[in-house]
Length: 462
Image (cartoon, rainbow, N blue to C red; front, side, top):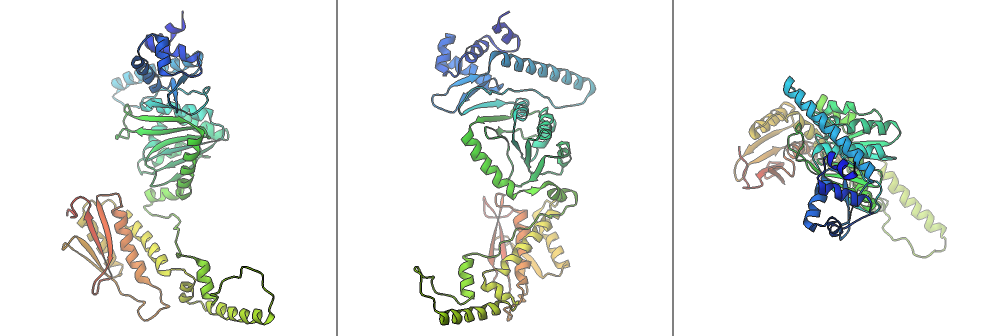
């Protein structure tokens, strides 16, 4: 029996089988060269190559003109056999599902090309092929693998054979990190991951992808909207390039540093509380300049060495010491002199309180119902008065007592209170949502006013 017959028995067409035989014997080949070898048109050659890329048999270099390659023929056959086994397994499971009335997810496999050097990429279609490539990446990973799972990626991972290989990689010492956007419906699935795997939550992680060591990346191009679907329309791009991997690693590292540890983030969905560490901004501008001003030192440092003058040294030291003693009085004004914005800090704390309040009211659908509940909470807490009006646009009016009037050293609690309202509305209506929130200082006895506008027609539907 010939290799061509074996490949055809494994599911390839005659032209695809011939293409694989030719490519497996050559380092890299252009589509036009393959077409010449096959005795067909370049379009026909491209069609065959496209199909072979989709199932993960062929990779393409990231250069112009594109060059195609594949593994040795024995590896290709082994992968095709595995794919046939998976296809048979899916058929058996589907038959069992029809008989029992149950529904399970399908599993399949893809392949990996290790032998061809240089940047290359391939397009994988169908979730089963994509996650089988992730399985292969986990098997070959030596140092680190990072999975970006978005909102429902953990569900897809746990329903695939890739999960076992990811856990196996972690057990043999590979550093495995998972970045995800937690959802109350999928939290339990994270328990299937090996305990050594680090998990963090980020609201910014909406896409799916994988980064392996410093040489291979998977980026999902399309994901089926139904999170429990079979993912027949899913598509992903596999990129093998060290420079691209380095760029992706820097991006992932930046997100990872800002992300929240799993156990902390999980509290949001189990206890409905936000307990993440609050990163505060204490001020702006040059703190060195603020400190020099506070010490009364407004001069410039000399460019050249100057003779030592004991009298000048003692005089300047005395002045600086007096200024330093003034800063030790413990008053809030001393912090302001040093550039530390107390009002800004309190507003940030208020924002966090508002975020938690909006989070606890997230099940309320209607705009008016949500705002009424927020106002009831506000009045019950005794924080002041809030109302809303429709003219000239729908807006929330906030009335606060400025306890700092006439007392420069008093805590600006109005910033805290107004920050709560700001935090509630910005959480309920994020920047990329249908409703825009615009804050402005209040008029007359108002402290502030928040306009709620639809981005499309500048009117909010009530």
